[in-house]
Amino acid sequence: MSLDIKICGVKTDDAIAAALDGGASHIGFIFFPRSPRYVEPVEAGRLRQAISGRAKAVAVTVNADNAFLDRIVAAMSPDMLQLHGDESASRLQEIKARYGLPVIKALSVREHNDLDQISPYLGIADRLLFDAKPPKGSELPGGNGVSFDWQVLSGLDASIDYMLSGGLNAGNIGEALKATVPGGIDISSGVETAPGIKDVGLIEEFFRAVRAAKRADAA
View 1: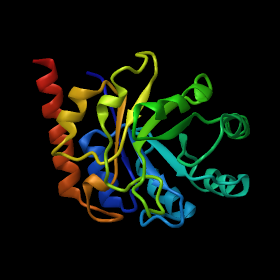
View 2: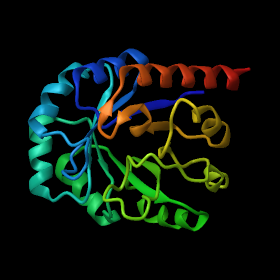
View 3: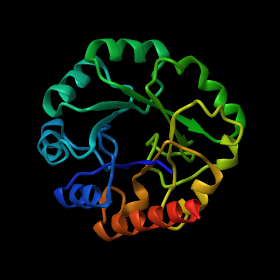
View 4: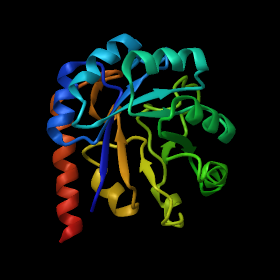
């Protein structure tokens, strides 16, 4: 089972080192000021130096305008952009043309009808990311530590490349991978001791759980 693993919302050198040592393929930096995982673009540029050649650095934004995206791209030179807001397919096209970078489009899912929103992005987004809809009252579009019914994805066209996100942790990743066939997984709050505080031990535990799930799948 080939599986990309993205550790998202990192802010420290220790968290990046643990993610890389575990085998992360992607590391995400959050550029949403209301998030406890927010990092300034210049600091992200410093942190991402350790990533070069080992994983892809992903800039995660929420309905960002061009001025903010310009700052992010200039300061950290991301390998990919992730759009986690209400960005339309035409906005994706505009962003891809402006920066020449691959784009992940995050979509919020709760029930099967939510998959209807996929169609406009096919052929435009380089990858989709399915995250749980935020709980009522949350200001964060992601990183809320809640999951959705993974069976919703059971009828998804096998040609659609997506990452699974939303409430994943070491305790449920095996079950999640039995229920779905994602090309990648994305975790943030599941390796934290508090919102925005990544824990090296939890990161290591998560990678052990992923390896165990892979062994079980191979068996």
